[in-house]
Amino acid sequence: MPAALVTGAGRGIGLATAKAFLQEGWKVLALDKQFGSEIAGERVDYDLTNLAGIPGLIDKLGELDTLVNNAGVLYCDPYDAIPEAHIEEIVTVNLRAPVALIEAIAPQMRKRKSGRIVNVGSVAAFTGHPDLWYGATKAALLNVTKSYASHLGRDRILVNAVAPGPTLTAMYDQLPQSRKDGVMRSVHAGRACAPEEVARVVLWLGTASPDYMSGATVDVNSGSYPR
Ligand SMILES: NC(=O)c1ccc[n+]([C@@H]2O[C@H](COP(=O)([O-])OP(=O)(O)OC[C@H]3O[C@@H](n4cnc5c(N)ncnc54)[C@H](O)[C@@H]3O)[C@@H](O)[C@H]2O)c1
Image (cartoon, rainbow, N blue to C red):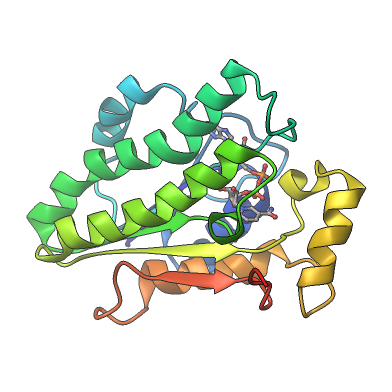
């Protein structure tokens, strides 16, 4: 049975993604630092700010066919008064941890000459963002996607990304209403995305998208590009 590691699987897009892989008959390792009552797959309690522990964690988890780097954090701080601790956490969870996970998993995928990695970016990568470091880390993650597509491509490892628009999760709920109103004006569907809609694209990239596709970002944003 193929196995996927999904980070941030305790809720939101990660939980929906874990369920989507399970429905396809995959073994799912659901990693989060906190879980609610619903857990899809085998629970892996881990705080991704512990970068040093990531290689040991991956050794313990065994063979992984797909890695979904989904965990992320966002704070609604004013762009010119972001606390150092928030910057540190955003950069670590949104950017450094995905890179550390890829580095830790790449050797086993290289050995097998197969593997898929899906990074969860954001439309914020293209538009800029009121939370400056959130937007910056998401843009960097899309660049990281292209870099690893190139580094790992000869070993037949596919590295792609999704860039969701506003999606109905706890992260979206924390936005002030004025920002939600602005976002709603830009999406053509006139509604926020369901986490399951993003999960379907992650599942496709993590299981079935063509081998010729790597380094790509699939936008799931109802056409809400900067004008
Ligand atoms: N919701 C949106 O509108 C939206 C839009 C674009 C991109 N995204 C991205 O989608 C991804 C999932 O976001 P979501 O909307 O489901 O958010 P969410 O806040 O509902 O879920 C994020 C999950 O990540 C986990 N997490 C955070 N820090 C962690 C850490 N240090 N260690 C382990 N787990 C940690 C949280 O516990 C949580 O379960 C994120 O990368 C986010 O940036 C979300």
